[in-house]
Length: 290
Image: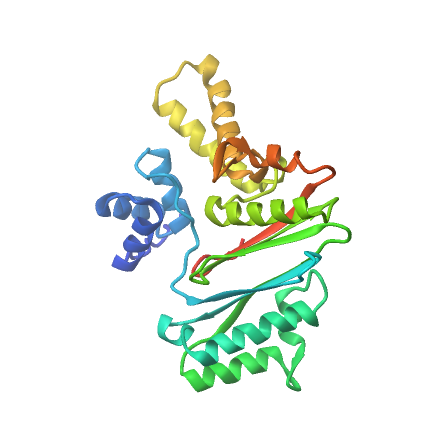
């Protein structure tokens, strides 16, 4: 016996969320959501296949407010970054909230091991209590949900960790370079951190881009090429070209430097002998963890 799938009701909030992610019109968003039975990521993919969605906006946004804080060693050997969320900007700007995020970041920097996970940090002790309990108690005082969302702690053995935090404390970056701790390497790491904050790469190199992201882009490119009526014999080549372009736009080493677009980040790194980008973390308040 065939079982019919129940059609999920599409709310105005769903439509507005999809519109904010894609820039598409209200009716196009409604139709895509109906076709996807309410699945927002799938609806976004449908819009892109149809050529309706504008350049992809970052998916997975939420309504959280909060702050990003960074602590760095003066010698560039290590840095830690924390994102603390709350419900309203009003609470995020209070002295109590700012003091809490500063203390949590200093703890991660001074007392937590390099590579500490969020789960491990929440279990660590601050003022004789688990950090999870400290955050929960502060949440009770404010009357808002307060969440320690993300942490990153990098340490470069013989290398350099650069950091950048935007003036509004909504975006922060730390980036680890191996191979050098010279003044040139420190300056390079700082410039790359600033670039990452602006350009929002998803990986260091094209080969590091998650396979599921590449496959999603492949599906979209194949559908677009088919709709354009390109000859079957050249479709595969066109699709591969689109994928190479996508990888170049989203891989850090391939991106043109935001201050000097005639030079890629990879070319900049090559100017410092022995330097190599190992990893980076970029936190933006209101965006989902990658």
